[in-house]
Image (cartoon, rainbow, N blue to C red):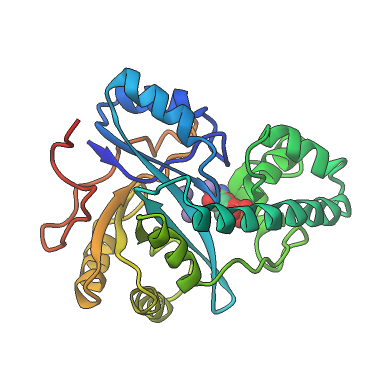
Length: 278
Ligand code: AMP
Ligand code: MN
Ligand code: MN
Ligand code: MN
């Protein structure tokens, strides 16, 4: 099995990079990409664990992008994690995450979340602070029932804890990935809550900006969405990728490696093959 989109404690995942790799191994995953939000900090630990478990670890990152005032996610796969262009780009996003986290903390203080920034920082434990960390605090304080509810009430656009963030542009982020010898994949094309017309425009813009592949099969994609993405990929000469977007063992409906294989009409990225060379 192959899974090219997962998170660890370096961002909003619940497992350490080593524990993630161990779980992937126990589930029969042979090739795993670690793709934390705007960071490659978990890669060295994941690499060491992958060597002991005989897993093919693909160094990756899920990079935030602003396109047409919307946030998109571009997964970079096969990254040279020491490349200065990539490192500078990620550092810029990490700085932005810090100021944004402080602003979100101030906003949430108004609805009764105490000491938000300090607690979010402690919860992230050295990893990137994401809205998910604030969602967990809201749940812990009884202000929301679960992560989804916290997003719906407080963290989405239009809600009191939302803070607009301007990330790098599509072409810029794709250039960082390419500079680091990586493959740029548009993550979960059905995960942005936009209409079909917007989704098609987004895929066209991604291809136009030099993107390489579409994430066709995810942990939550339906067969119908996968066929639609396969058509989108063919139309724009994009390859296909697969990734669960695993965050936590508590999400029992979504586990590492639990993704359908690519539809046969799609050209796989070089990371999607039946038997990874170990
Ligand atoms: P951020 O990059 O800090 O804006 O956080 C984005 C992350 O929040 C995503 O990668 C998801 O893991 C999580 N997220 C976004 N929307 C929701 C939602 N409605 N329910 C649960 N988690 C969400
Ligand atoms: Mn996430
Ligand atoms: Mn994402
Ligand atoms: Mn993700």
